[in-house]
Amino acid sequence: MGISLAQYACTVAAPVLLLVNPSAGGGKAGRSLPAVRATLEGHGLEVRSEQTRDLAHARELAHAAAAAGDTVVCLSGDGMIGAVADRLRELPDALLGVLPGGRGNDLARVLGIGADPVRACATIAGGRSHKLDLGEVAGTAFVGIASAGFDSDANRIANEAPSRLGNLVYAYGALRALIGWRPARFAVTLEPDGEAPGAQTHSFTGYSVAAANSRAYGGGMLLAPSARLDDGLLDVVAIERVSKLRFLANLPKVFKGTHTRLPSVHVWRAREVEISADRPFALYADGDPFASVRCLAP
Image (cartoon, rainbow, N blue to C red; front, side):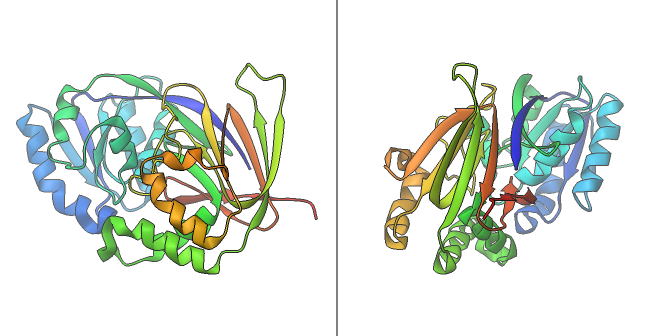
């Protein structure tokens, strides 16, 4: 599966279409809508709101609003933000604002927006324009991190978990996935960043491969602590095989980003990456399944 980079501008301005995924964050986004809208209006913004039915609905609402000159603001998780950004990159003058409404809110965290959607409304009223990279898989964009392998199992379990777990759902997914995990064989081909002489392929047996446009995923896990949203490159993180007990002992390090110092963890930088594995995996990005990883030849 190939992953590459595009660009999109993230900023805020009035008038505003406030797009809300009412089920995001276990219903948190929907419950906070009245207070968020009132706060935005209190900042002097002209606001209308729409509750989305699904990602396709969010894409179409966002495109229509941006084409009419409105700023689109997402009160949702990263999955909807990525879907909207993907659609809006067709419009060079489109503007996108971000309010934390999901369980993880990793893009908002990396952007320094904060976890309280009402307080974050100040960034909509006083934000500034800044171009951000988007990752791209088979023509569809994502904002954060695309990963496969162990992460595929952990994401699937987290998405099926009860909403009452809140942000703990990601740790729950990882622990449940670890129980049945067996190592996979991966091949990762990197297209260089302009300094390397040509494509490089790395093969290893282990847990996962991730292509990181942003630093964080899973509700604050700093998988790629050196990744930047505006450098035109992906940080590619590969986790080699260690015992399950060692993997579990190392897991807390990812919340500080110190796991990258471990000999079992490798980080490369590239503009494009192709990932293959010895068995089928769903590639997840921004918490949602995006594509299937190509299988290695036997």
